[in-house]
Length: 443
Image (cartoon, rainbow, N blue to C red):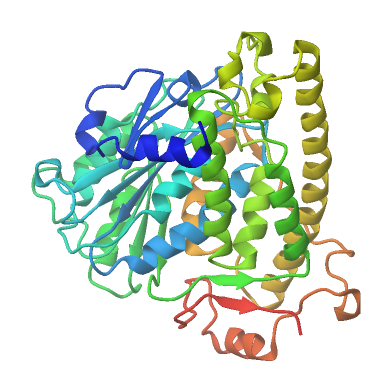
């Protein structure tokens, strides 16, 4: 079955609402807002050998929230890469919910679960890029209640669990489930709640959103959702994009999900490229990192899993090029692709280290804090509890090589960028006042 055919097969499956999450789906099936796809038990039950980080992202998709959706698209890979700095390396499980959208079911409080907890980051990106706005009533308490009741949160004692709720209007519109009660219920289950108010610090609604976080030991942030995220493009980005594409060639899709997931990998590369070079570079770093899990559809990663036997994969479930190989040739081919992937990942990691240090230094020069408010709301909350959960974070530091002068081919902030930073119009609240992402390009 070709990739396009496999996608078409899944596309005809009826999309389901959040009601599908009232009862746990079988371990071999994942239900998303776009249909049904095969999943692995790992998506539903965390591996006990690794620390677990669970992140439920709840986004307001009412009529005025297109800017919030764009921010989430741009910051997803930055959030993942920051979590990858944790030691020991955790298993990351992400869920996506939306609320305040007239396209959702009124009986569900206009809340939809787009994907339950999953390690498939490409699926999360796919769902983010499928979002659209549509009027609606924003019921913060209801989306929090849905996240608590419809997601399969782990009971692992040392898991780090965070719900992030982002939106505007009053946080107290829901008279059925008050956010006060939802926040209390969350922290009682050791689930922190961070809130992001899309508006201004002085808005009348801001204090209510702050309470959402304070009642659940989370982090509160204010985001100008109508402003574009800052994107600093560097000379490293082009090569990182090339390496990201080259990495795709080392994946060996197998099984019912393989062709669809492989195509989606390419699709999410294209989605990143549709934004800017900085997002492409961040996604490349994710694909080279330990949080990018593909063992449910890729033979190279699957063969690293305890109990997986390459010989047990049916011939028709193998990549077409491997079907005529002998068992020995198949094993050797998997090893070869694995070695090539390691080589490419090493180059990505080296360039990413230089890129991160360079960007960090330029942000410091401009008086900007690390990251934007969207990912800071996640980072600050997780790090506040990291040590108690057995996790340590090692932040990247600028190096002499990465902060070399312009003659070494490194991007500098434009004079206009420096002027706006000094004037306070390029600040930590994302106040960039642009229709399109502000890209700092090479002179």
